[in-house]
Image (cartoon, rainbow, N blue to C red; front, side, top):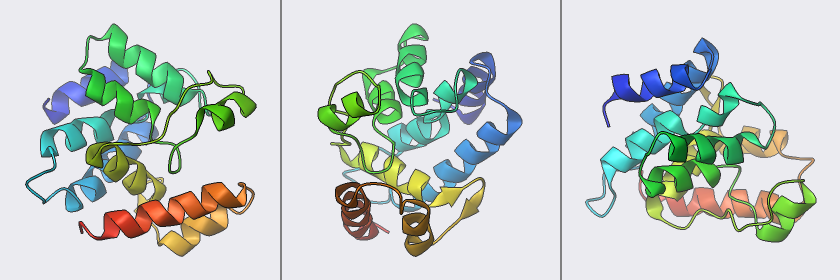
Amino acid sequence: MREEDCIGLLRRAGCSGGVIAHCRAVRDLALAYASDPLINRDLVETGALLHDIGRGVTHDLCHTEAGGEICRSFDLDEAVAAIVERHIGAGLTADEASLLGLTPRDCMPRTLEEKIVAHADNLVKGTRVIALEERLQHAIALPRRQRKRIRRLAQEMELFR
């Protein structure tokens, strides 16, 4: 999907200019991890541009679920909806989602494309790329297993950069 089409969908979903700028920054970083021929670069680009589409509805954790629903209502590929639903931190297990008041379903990134977008989003604060250490400082209130998961995802993804 072309960038202009993705930006149009973000606007249609009610996303602000700040959210759109963030999505572009995540896309730019995500593409730096998508040079391996096994990776679907078009899917990474589309997923990264649309990963926060749910922020047109809410800015809490529910933006992932809302975003997945929006993607499906726009008849987007299920692979894009999966990226949107699985991009929080390094993913959430069904139990973790339930404890956070979300639908109790597995939202762990599985594919390389899902992992790349989640990792890139972890390293972009606003439109600024940050170091993993800074990201982990922002995540200090998270349970230890979630912080470890973020670090493991980063280690795995850095092999693709």
